[in-house]
Every structure is written in structure tokens, then in C-alpha cells.
Length: 24
Image 1 (cartoon, rainbow, N blue to C red):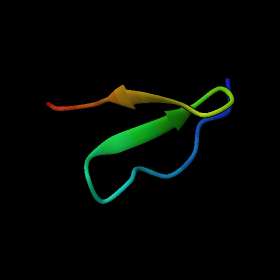
Image 2: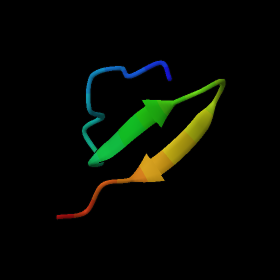
Image 3: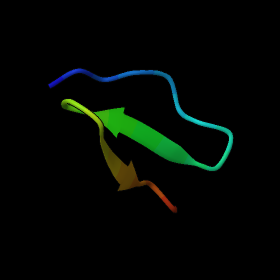
Image 4: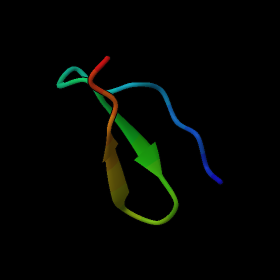
């Protein structure tokens, strides 16, 4: 899994363009 830095919107880039909402 390609874990990138968290986005400003609170999202984390996963795989090939898939976005996962990491709202904790």
C-alpha cells in the first residue's frame, strides 16, 4: 500500500488514486 502524507482535507492517499477518509 502506498502511504503518502496526509492531505489538508484530512485524507490519506492509498493505492493508485484511491482516497480514504481518515476522520478521527
